[in-house]
Length: 206
Image 1 (cartoon, rainbow, N blue to C red):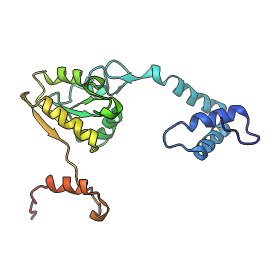
Image 2: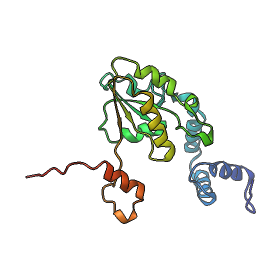
Image 3: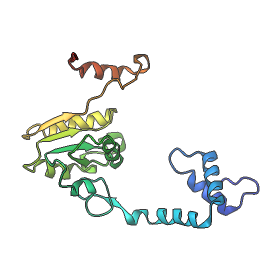
Image 4: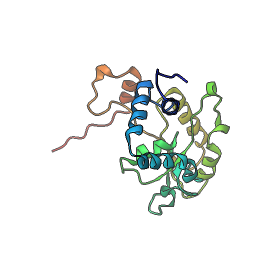
């Protein structure tokens, strides 16, 4: 534990723990610790209660693997969702990001990772067996592969596409390319290549 001169041990322990969070450096951890110290004790207690009960209050959906407070998540329990389409993502947070657009009405399946031989992550370490069971259901007609654009993400998408190629369902991949407002000079060659490969016909508007 790195102690600044005169810093009490309880505050130093708090700063040390805050510094382990992603994106939080020593200075940010110090500011957060001092901010908590200046807040009313009741507010700090409420925050502490939320943190201490987080793992007990929520987990992962048994069907899709997304965040859930109960056995199934709200999306899987929603009967208005289209059960014929399953969007495959890597992590539960990906579901939250896709849901922000409010344009997808199907269901999800979270792999909880992606194929990475270097990290020792193979098919057995991901939620692929449960995806096998879902794909085998007669209602499923399309599988959307929404893994990341990294090398491992692309390898995972290719693996799943080959795995279910013999199934009687449509397999699609999310489009990638030049983002809105993006300048070509700032884009990498891979993004530009994908943009050209996934070009669409120009629609003339009156």
